[in-house]
Every structure is written in structure tokens, then in C-alpha cells.
Image 1 (cartoon, rainbow, N blue to C red):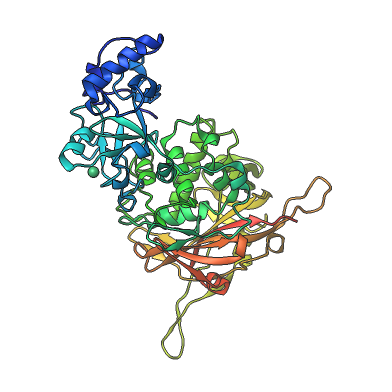
Image 2: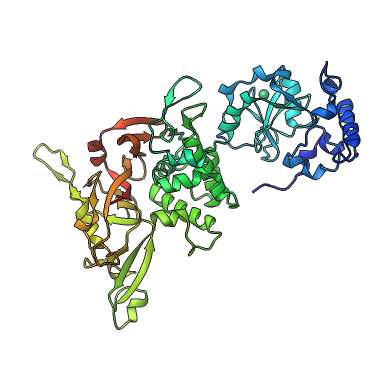
Length: 519
Ligand SMILES: [Zn+2]
């Protein structure tokens, strides 16, 4: 993912630097460092009572400097925070690492530094680079390299190390130990943002930049699938994956669970940029899309990227969401294989989600001319998968579906939107469903275990995406269950509030994620 070295990066001291070999003989290193001090670090040339520059010099393993390793390097001196007069000028309230890290002048994403005073991004740190120039023009001196978290003082160009910088480095790149991940759902945790407000890690709002609420609800719902969340909380798990989408999704998940965030909300801007490019602009920030389409696309894209395009391989996505259907198409129906077949055609088809059809909704009006919204129990519409109900479709034929493998997390979507030639219609039917203990076996035959008895098939709801408003417009919000306190929350973009389970069950549900209960 790292782009190659580009011209701009060396646009300054790094390339015009001297040519003595730096590594090796101490004497040579000292000479190089002394030259460095003389040429480029006038301020550091004679630290009062300090160490000679050679002793202060450390190997700078900065990526950008690597190809120059055999040359003299300008930024070899490191100072402790107490030796840097500008540490106090850092303004944490101005720092926001959620937006795409591009130089505000050149728009390049390569070799970018964040000004820790005003929060803007600039490229390079050598003389005449954008960051360097900004330090002179604005009088801002503290810069953090965004891909390494290292902090430099410009224009003096020494590196600053100090424990007080750790919180910024953490916000830039939140990390979790296996132990922290393991107890994620076993303790109620509260955190405090910079402005003093409290937030719950994992239950923070996502900024709706224009019309990306369709994506926000999907991210929130997918994060309730805890093995997927846990996988993405540990970048080690996908470090070798070159997919920008995977990396950005991982970053977003880690930011949502950051217990030391500066603010109690996250902007999915960088993730959405990756989505936009990976989907060929099918999903963008400024146009509302269907969360169902988005979830389906995202799950497939993450799976494909995590398996290196070998879609048959397993990934955390398929391990969690994939089940299997037996599809029987009646002979002589449809336009596919069954069309000319002598007998019914039976196929095993993997699925990541199941679509449930609503009965056509006649809009009755009662005596007071009020529209009565019909209701249907979820068990009734689940019968589509009972192995005997026939589903008619001109193209696909007369088909029967039966679930032959239950997924660990069952994603259901309610087909509320009917597209006809001219417009999209919304079926407002209320689906009645239990928030806890949805026994699938009550509606459909469930697969049998090795001993012939039915496998466990009781599910608890963990996320519920709701549409509000008319078809083609309106907004999406999501109900999410926080296990540790058995509490439901409603999240609509930035707003997070408690909600009663009864209210969850009464909503115009559109997309649901259920977790198979441990027996
Ligand atoms: Zn600045």
C-alpha cells in the first residue's frame, strides 16, 4: 500500500545532503553528525552542556530515509521533551486523524506530517518542504509523521521523544493487546474525551459527512459480530493484506473502540475514501445507498481481499456469516439448468444473508380514516426456507429453499423496497420478532448434527437496522446490543442513546444480525 518514493519527498535536505557514509566507524559517524549539525542544525551545533551531537545521533529507521542510509542524514539528533521548548505548544483539541492524510498544499498522501499545533497536514520535513515552510510561516514547530508517529521539531529538524506524546501516537494508531481484546465484552467501560464528555468505547457515533448514513449503520452492525471486531482490532491479523479497504476498515474498527480517544465520535472519512475507490464509486459519501447492497458488497469485498482473491478459502467473514442453503428447482421451470432437465435440480448454495419477503401490504383505513399498518410475525416470513414453500420467479423458476448449515451470525434482510419500472415502493409492514431467543426450528426444519438430533438453532438479536421515511429518501439508524450490560442503544450517525428492547422490536426493521446462542 505504501506508494513508491516520489520526487517530492526528497525535495530538500534529504537529497542534497552530504555523501559521507553514516553507519560504521564511530569516527565517521561522529564526523557526519558534526557535519549535520554544522550544515543543518545550527541550533543543535553546540548544546549547552549537552552531549556531543554524535552521541545524540540515533539510527533513523524512518522509511523515507532508508534509501539514503549510506548517506549522511539530516535528522539524526533526538532530544527529550524537556529539551524542546515547543512541546507545550501542541494543541490536542485541534488534532483529528480521521480525515484523509494528504498534504494540505500538494494533496499528496506521501511522506505526510501532521502539524501538532493547528492539525493540518504537510509534506516532507527537509528545507523547502511544505512542513518546513509551514513551521517558518506559521511559527508552528511540532510535527508528527503520520505513518510512524515520530515527532520532529521544525525548522530545527531534531526528533523529539517524550512520554507525553504517547496519547497522540495512540489516537493516530490505536492498538489492543490480546488480553484487552479478550475482555472487551466483560467489563463496562467509560472513557472521557478531551472536552470532558464521557463516551463508551465501541458505542460512539459515526459522522454523517453528507449522505453516508447507509454505510454508518452497516459498520455499526458489522462491529456487533464480535469475532469480526476482534479480528480487526489486531492489525497483526491482516498486516500482510495489501488491500486498502481491509486496512481502512481495520483502522475504523480500532478507532471505534479506542478507549483513549480525544473525542467521543469518529469520522469514517478515510474508510469511505477506500470504499469509494474499491467500489468504483458505486458507494460514495454524497449519495444515499441501500445498506443491504452496501453490506453485501462490503462483506464480499473484505472476504475477497482477505483471501487474496481465492474466494473458496475461509476468512473471518465467511466463518461468521456464511451458511448454506439447499435450493431445489422444479424440472421444466425457469431459464437455468432446470429448464430442460428431466428431474428437479438440487444445488447447495452458500449464503451470507437471507432475504425475507413481506406479504403485499393492502393499506386499510379504519373508521377514522387512519391508515392501518399491517403486521407479520417473523416466523411466518421465515417459512420461505422450510424446504416446501415454493418461490416463483420467471428467471429462476419454481424453487424451494432449505437451510442446510446455520451460520454463527445470521443476517436477515426484510425486502421492504420494491422496485418497479417507474419508482421504488416501500412496504411499511411491521415485522414482529423476538429480540432474544429466536428459535429458528419453530419456523423451518434445521440441520441435524452427527447424532441425528437437530443442531442448536436459537438466536439473539445483536443489531437491527431501521429505515425511516419514504422509499428513495429517508434515513437509516441502527439498534445495537451491548452484551456486557444487556442494554440496547440506538445509534443515528453521531447520536447514541439508550433504547428499550420493546422499541427495537416495534421498529420498521430492514436488516438484522442475530448471534447463535451458546447452548
Ligand atoms: Zn500548523
